[in-house]
Amino acid sequence: MQAKRIYLDYAATSPILPEVIDYISEIAKTIFGNPSSTHAEGRIAKSFLEEHRKTISSLLKCNSSELFFTSCGTESNNLILKSSVSTLGVKRIISSPIEHSCNLQCFKWLQKEYKTQVDFLKVNEFGQIDLEELESLLHDNSQKTLVSLMHVNNELGTMLNLEETGHICRKHHALFHTDTVQGIGFFPYNFSELPIDFASGSAHKFYAPKSCGFAYINNQNILEPLLHGGSQERSVRAGTENLIGIGAMSKALSYCYADLENRMTHLEQLNLQLRSLLSKQFPDILINSPWHASSPKILNVQFPYFEGIELLTIKLDIEGLSVSGGSACASGAETASHVISQIRPDHPGKAIRFSFSHLTNSEEIERCVSILAKVIH
Image 1 (cartoon, rainbow, N blue to C red):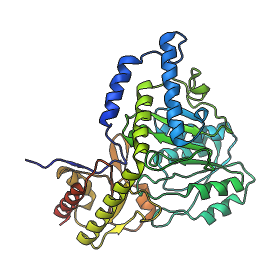
Image 2: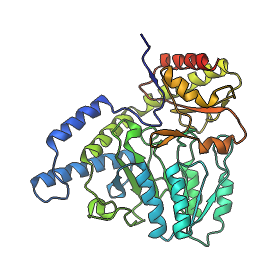
Image 3: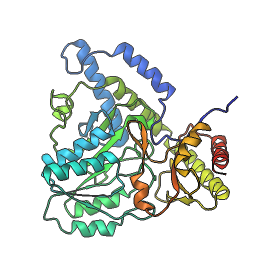
């Protein structure tokens, strides 16, 4: 009998927690009204919606009026980036070449449609930026500028210092947007104290259903909607709210933060275990994820070239190991990694992203390395 499959691709998506599945069933049975309706069923739905908005905003320590529900992180980022240009008059964006593809594609569109100037910061072998370079670029504040940098890189796990970056932006009167999709549920945020203007989250990254997310928009900034229609979400995001998704997102996030310290300790142990075992088994590997200033849920490893290296993830899948070598964001297909091409432009090998969960155990990490040894050797 084939051993149970090992899933180490939690940065791509996560399973829905059993407790959240139970809550989804409860919502489906009891909450069916439209929150925009004025009758009793609508008022119940509206109360439910605002209750969970307050729950999520309390977990992220922001005002509930600053939280807007969307369909996903991609929509949230599109809303923030495009509306910052069209509504707030942003003329220049400073970012990095290893952002999520939804942001990079937004930049291209804004360059074409609005002639927005886009400046990319250099990144080192771990995907880290130089804050001195950022400050240097911000010295020229003749144009209204938005700095857009993700908090946790989705392929490397590399973390940005939000507080330091935000203070630099404030000093030079620039807006600051951070994609927090990989950080929400795995890092304690205080949006009311952090010097940020915008942030985004996606429910399926922290054990809730897909097609539900949120945008944090600081009360000092008013954005025009990306989707036009009704007056839902205070006229910032038209469309009837996904009550089941929002309730499930709220419940899953509550579970994440209720046990955050234990979960993060567990992830650190798994990350360290895999680093150690891989380094012993494959002395020639390069670890692309820094040990410091990195999310323990992600470990990106560069394997040396060998015959058939381009098929490595497929071979691992056949052996029962689910990992990724790029971004799963193009019709479910793994695409070539623009992140790795930036930090390792001359390396002929293959990068693999391992990403963990509190559901992952030590025995799975050992089996993972055994499978890799079998396939590679």
